[in-house]
Image (cartoon, rainbow over the protein chains, first blue to last red):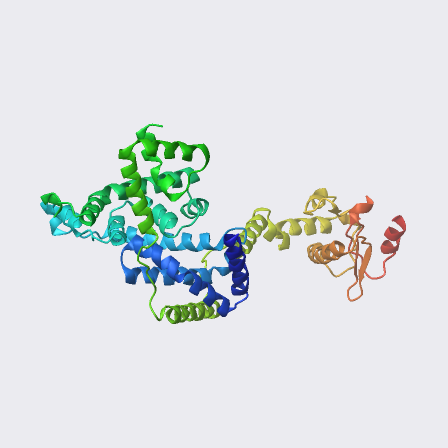
Length: 200
Length: 233
């Protein structure tokens, strides 16, 4: 019900934007800018770049306001634009990939990342998210952090509903595996038990 | 339910995405399996933590920067529309079609002997003129007309010798008048008797549509022949 109301509000605002109402556009920006930022930062892992992508997203929304199809959900359209821009950015980065010197020296870098996991679980999840493959990360962020319905995630990612569910499930399982030692450590510390040397 | 099956759907269970009998089956298994319960706890911690993940916010001047960008884009768009079209196609159908059509017409005109239409067939004319002076019958002139419906029905011997025109001159004049007449006929459905008041010369032409042979006859002044042909019609 709440979602339906939100949809209707978006439609009304977009109608006004189509007629050139900048106040309505400002309302849309205020409503979605931080939501988009939360998704895009986790995709590109750089705050400044993420903000640029969010800016570009709203600019494109304004430029293509006449092509918005009112049969579809506005937020779906918005997230799709933002994610496409983020994907383009990641693709660009792949072309100019810089290698860390540690990567060439065996598994030192990997160990370092594991040891860098913060003791605070949300921050540890944030860190572990960076290592997730893009397709699992997108599904997880949209579903579990943005709390969008599965159907909308499927529309945004343009994949079947079953695939979304499977990707989200897989992402959660990977994260759990990555965070397991950290969680055990936290639990042990909270219970006052002695830890094995490797975890210290 | 077996452990493997339960663990594959534990995250959905912890998120509250499972309903009905399946949920009950997982709950029953968890009560009896401490290993799976440990997994469940781990999932619950992760699920709980995702709800309190750090929030990212855009910068202070985000809106003003965006509005500036939009203003710049709008300015650019307006300028582009006003002065420079986004794309100037070098070759378009709208441009090439008239050129191609004109070229086709010119080629067709040339191939069908269009230029000869305006030319006076000099050699033929001289021969005919000579024949007319000698008084001999020569029907070759019957074929010099380019259009089958425009033929001279009068033999050359019957042409007036009193006129100061040689036959070739008369024929050239007839051709010119015929051209004029053709254009007139093209505009009007019927054609009949046309007479020039300036010269002692007249043309009589009948529309092919009436199934009457069209005649082009040079006649001096108000000739009786003109009247005669009108009566024939």
